[in-house]
Image (tube, rainbow, N blue to C red; front, side, top):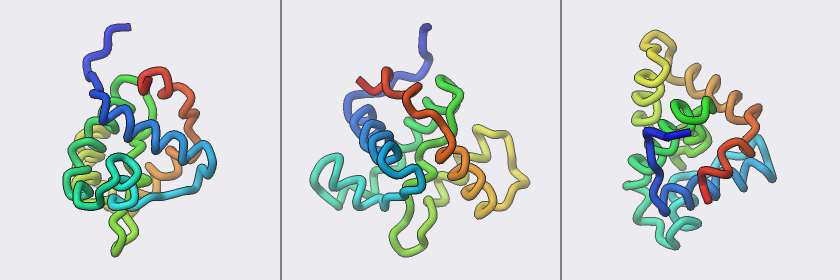
Length: 124
């Protein structure tokens, strides 16, 4: 199948980290900083993680019919994904009425129930 969205090597690596994490604990969440350290060994890239996660979530949604895996990546202080996640959720789901906390909870539940083995071949 010809995919419209292409993931680069770094995006694939971040995706593998998230899939592997879910494999070991389907209820897990990770902070942006923890994910940055696992991906590149530096916490300072946490601020730029949004674009990477957005592309991975767009790939999950439109290319694999999977939930937005970035729902499990949370701000350390707030314990929820960034506002950027919610804006992407609204756009991808064409849902501008669901409140942010409800949208996050719904998407996290879908992430927990999804079969992430379907995404693995695209992350190699």
